[in-house]
Length: 101
Image 1 (tube, one colour):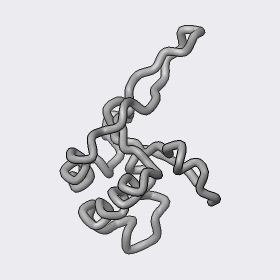
Image 2: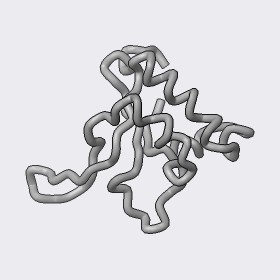
Image 3: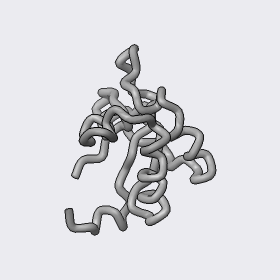
Image 4: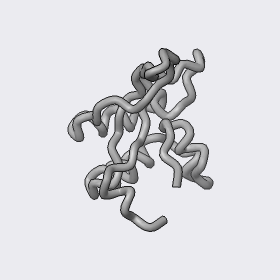
């Protein structure tokens, strides 16, 4: 089980889901959110104690905002810039970590 930015998640799917419209995947992600298994967040900058920089998931996005964000095809594509900051990512909740995969 891997949690990833949305484009990485889509790349793990089989056809026809991997190349289908994002709108078809929205109900799948929302069902995981509604079960309390995953949260959708934006990637934010992170600085390690040693001063090196990276990124991490930010605060969960409000459930009411997710249908529009998940239906946007751009959120399911790798950024042209290669910059992950601001991209949507899925993270397991504590309840989601307890599910035997």
